[in-house]
Image 1 (cartoon, rainbow, N blue to C red):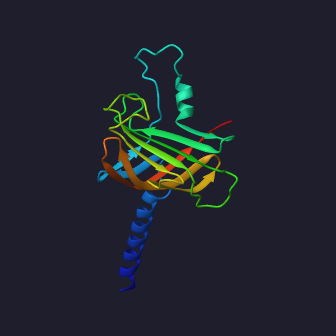
Image 2: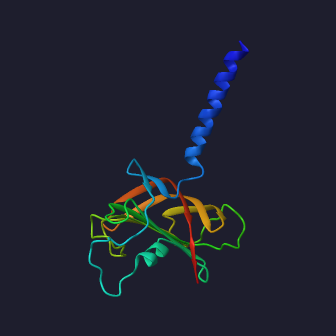
Image 3: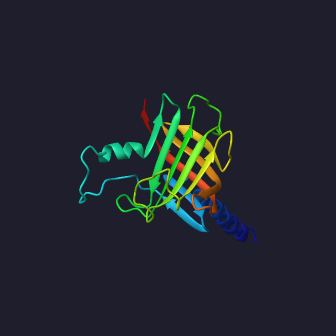
Length: 188
């Protein structure tokens, strides 16, 4: 009889570990649920190798840095991830104030902004005039989104987010079960 309990106990332990491995730590980039779909965005912004570039435009190295940066003098984080590096269909930009010397976690930023972009509407640029894409803000006036930083170690930031995103066309849509894990570049 005891032999039966050992395999069942081991099976339950393996199942519990397997479930927790999918939740923590989150994969690099963003994972979240939007419009009842599980979405994972892991790609950084890049220039298409075969398309013509404008003179004075950003290089791949500059775009890579802008995809995940900690502005130390402003105490501000900006992260951008998308589903493909060259011809993305979906992207998410997340920016929030962050004091790395705070030392207490979880850390909830006083100011945060998020934009979820469908690149089929208006190209690959993120813009404040997008009316068919979704945005959310958390500040002293509005609390559309909730962001919490769980840890910051060796320039890697890990956290969670959720909220209600609004489009310029008037539609509202929840974003749930969001996680992020990104190694940040430091800039002054």
